[in-house]
Every structure is written in structure tokens, then in C-alpha cells.
Image (cartoon, rainbow, N blue to C red; front, side, top):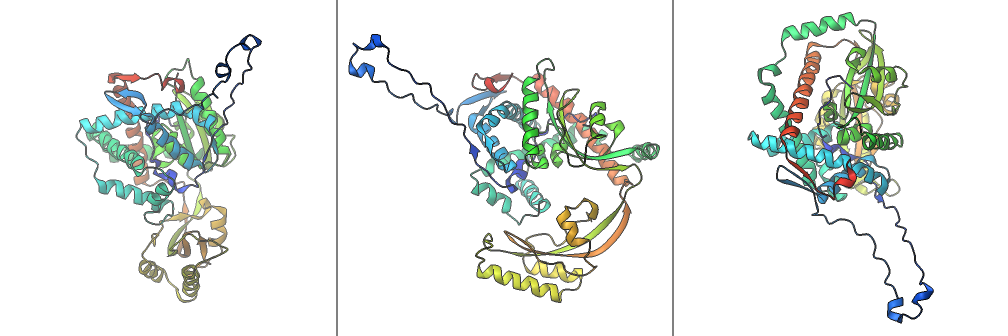
Length: 464
């Protein structure tokens, strides 16, 4: 984790909706049985007949778990957040595991309440258009048709309000930090030049494309609960839970906003404990808990390179998407789906340029963007690389069929680029992220110090 990266950002949990949903597996209850004692033989039949023990009832949804500066946190709030996590993993999650996570969920939601109160105190208003744009951006980044995220939440029984509230907090908190930074938030040409000089001095040293999940420990003397939570998350990740989505849900670092992605990191910008681990990690592995100042880090490495040297192939792509009216059943496609495949096959034979691809996608409603943005061949999934590497320029790919439609791809241009060379704008973004992390960490400490937080007995089993 970055030395400056210890902020308590709760992620855009909207990302959770696009993973496959799986039900919570309830652990069976075991009830002890009793036998009548011989001394009770003279009691009446009614006395001897015992009513069966009633099953343990879940806590009421409106049960208050905490009051934060007069604002309540209820069991319903925690249950909704837990449901988002279950949907995000795409794996069976037992009630025992959810019990271990409960304390962390409560702590995160207390942080969100404090952020929301600060947003309101500063009279910052997050417009509905900003929230809609954020949802649309998440859908595009994950290759989802328009409104697919909302529809998925609804079909899985998750309140859209839960998603909207989280996005509102994230957008509003960023506006709070911009106000807090003021003039200090502007990155100067001198600062960029100084960072460029520092990178030149790093030539030949290793860099790591990393992602992280940071679990804070409020009291280092008692970290048992956080360590158990960290191990639970690691087990879920190793079972196949998507790292970006779990990071978005639970990481307390600034990088949570980008699904835990830290970008390319030099060793000097990492905690020494993290450096000693990532040097040995295979690409794609999930680390054990790494204890650092302030908490635990879970790390994964997507790539390694030497500073200043990494050639890659930059692709300029266009795509056409033929949407299905209903989800595809491969054993029984509808007439509309058969027609879509015919149209896609015809396009493969008749479309010969990227402008034609854009025009065709617009005529189909542009359910997916015509230009998915620059892609780096070496970072694509193996299945996608197998399709694009042999594809000549200005030729249409074979049909890529999914449950919601058919995609066609075309490469407009290939360009060899030194990927290790950071542009001034990339350096400015990195510097800004560092400033934002520092400001967020300080402001959240101040909010906690001034807050009056009344933890009710119902919440305490999940906390220290």
C-alpha cells in the first residue's frame, strides 16, 4: 500500500451488480434436546408436555445498531450492504462468513454517515445527473448495456437506493476534498518536473502493476477481529471472487474508488513489508495478510517491469453490438436472436472500415460504445488476445456471443509504445491522488474525533 494511502473511501458498490448472484447459505441451527426426569413422573400431562423451542429469529430490520451524531444506523442498512457483497462475489457465502464481516460493515457505514454529515454541513448538493453519469460510466467500463446495472439490482432484490446512496457519498466526498485542498489541490509544472527527475533516477529498477485492499486496525493492541476479517476476504478472493469488486466494497484506501488498482508503483512508494512480498509474488496471486502501519494489506500483482522499459502494443478499436431482446438460451434461441446473428454475419462480409463500424453501431442504438478506448494487447485476457492478435487491420472479428447480444470488433490501428514512460498528465494524476489521500485521511480523523457515536448492544458482537 502507498505510504500516503490510508483513507476510508467506501467504494462504488454499483460494481457489485454485474457479477453472478448467489444466495446466502444459511448454516443449520442445532437445538439441544432434554428428557423428563423421573422426579417429574407425578406432574400432570400438560406439565410434562414441553413446547418445542422456537427457532432463533433474525433481528428486526428497524433495530438500531448505532447513533452517529443523532443519525441512526439500522439492521436494514447493514443487511442491504451485506446483500451487495454476496452478489459481488458470485460465490456461496455462508452465514458464518457474513457474521465475521458484520463488524467491518458497521464500521464502514459509520464512516459513510460521518462523510454524509460533512457533505450536508458544507451545503454540497450532488445532482441526479451526476449519479446517473456515474452509473452509466460503470456500465460502460464493464461492457454492460445501458440500464443493465439497475435491472440487475432489481432482479436480485437489492434496493436501488443502496446503490444511489453510496455513489452520492463518493461524489460528495470528492467535492469536500476539493474544497478542503483549495489552492493546494493544483499541481504545478515544477512538481511534475521534480517527479520526472525522480523517475529518471529510478531507471532500471522494478515497478509493479498492483491492486490492494486495505483493512484498517483502530487499536494495534487488539487486531484479532480485523485479521480474521482479512483472512476471510483472502479466502473468498482465492475461491474466485472478483478482486476489483471486493476492493470496491471493503477496502479503506483511496484506491478503492478504482477497484483497488494502484497503477504502476515503485518500491520506494510502498511499505517495506509490502515490497518484500510483491518481489516474490507470481503474477495474479493473492497475498496473505501483510501487516503495515495502521492495518493489514491484501495485495495482488498484475504485471512487473523495469522502470523506463516496457514495450507494448496499443490498439485503437471499434465495436458493433447487436443487442438481444431477451437473455440468450443457447439451446433455444429466439427468432430475434437468430436474426441478430444473420445481421452480424452479413456485417462481417460488408463492413471494411472503422467509420463504417461506428455508423452501424449507432444505427443499432449504440448499446455499447463504438470506441471502447485504447487497449493494450499485453494486458488483455488470453481469450481476447487470441481473437485480436491475428486480426488484420480493418477486418471484422468473428461474432462474440454473450447472453445479451453479439459483438464485432475491428482494429483501426496498432502502435508500439514504451508503456513505462509516464506522460505529464499521468504524473499530475498520480500527484493529485497522493494529495487527496492525505487530505481525506486527516479530515476523517478530525470527523471521528469530534463525533458522538453511541454504539448500541446489538452492534457490539460484531465489533471489539
